[in-house]
Length: 302
Image (cartoon, helix red, strand yellow):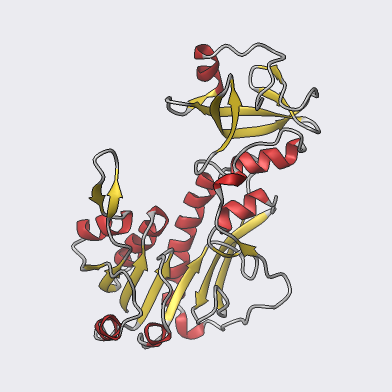
């Protein structure tokens, strides 16, 4: 098929690569514009932009698709289908209607659960047993379109958002190739009204750990916010990011270090297995503790 690909972050890159490998003609790649990054604040292309250039594909990065001129440029591509995955711009109706077979979105949840911006984070933080990807026919509403194909996976007990992100990215790439190959045979399933939830954008205010909460909730918070923005507490007045953990046995005052990096919660305890102190890189617990002695009885977050 002749495909317009629309995506921006690292999550979208395997999808673009899979479409190329499957032999689809990529008419153009749309992504967010380069933005200042790093110490020098030089403009840096997005991951999709950089990979598209490597593949020799035409890249477009309009600030908006609302204008008639941009919509005409898009329509002139005469695409069979647009594949959209974490693009970052709303698609006006004129854009949705332009490809002959419409616009297909790869969404990282089992719709209608977790419509919106942060479905992977929210699934882990809510303690969901499974999630997956849906290939959805796009319409004007936020992730409301009928579902053509869904693939479910279990969420691991110690899985972080980064881990699940990588698995779902690969799953989405395989799913869209399957969907395009069987498109005439796929029956669009209207999303039920029951079970709709919204994965609101992560607010950095959610990242501070409240040790009075149960261990199971703190475990999900740490894993769900890893690696970004990273759940955090304080040690000796300095911020300490907690990036991997597991539920552990033990009890004590909330925030109390029981042994190593096993920390008491309001109910139960967690064992932090990867952390990052201010000004340092990520370290597994053993490496971290070699450089930072924490006496049992120390209370974090004070």
